[in-house]
Image 1 (spheres, rainbow, N blue to C red):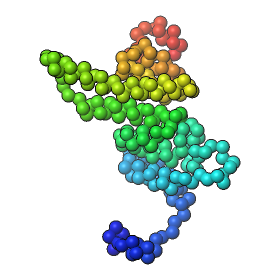
Image 2 (image 1 turned 90 degrees about the horizontal axis):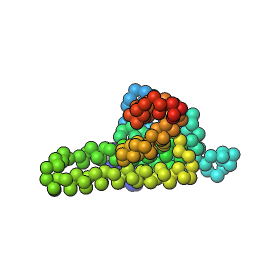
Image 3 (image 1 turned 180 degrees about the vertical axis):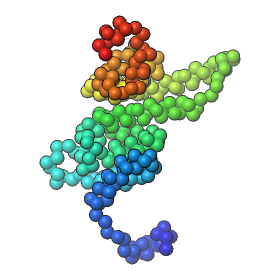
Image 4 (image 1 turned 135 degrees about the vertical axis):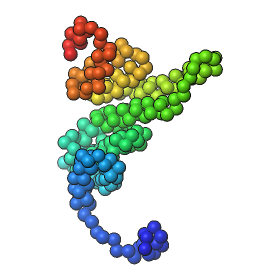
Length: 235
């Protein structure tokens, strides 16, 4: 009988198979990179959600030797402090990001204020803003006063999400230096706002901190128009 069609009394009498959470976690840890390798992103998301559910709340006060409260036993070769959150939560948020579910990704990382989790949340919000901008885009021809007002209103709304991101990044940098990836998001936001002179130093900081971030180099070359500027920036 389908479990969903059972009464509560019938479900109570079912003998569910016992399982060892540690074994399931180990199996999921092996499955996630394998599914990532073959590009089965929806199955990978499901495994990440399962992993997060199992490890949620697994850290107890008994583990007094663990200095990092965010550690959950999931090994990503990156510490929880570098992630800015637990490994299982980061994996789940990243799976949403890979499926372009940017709002869900940002929501689950809403408490991240540093590390890779902070970058991923802000980058997800940035891409979500671009996505909505494309979805809501309407060709406006400036041939009438009405269309001109419509274009002005859309431009104002378009900048609102960028201004929020800029405000958060500015506030964050006052508390602690941004890492290379967060500098990249800041540079993208400033460039999108048309603040090219302000964006330039953040692109420079990005490529110095993360020299393999090719897209940052591509943006940077559009802002540096002479060899003299390259030498001045010591790239």
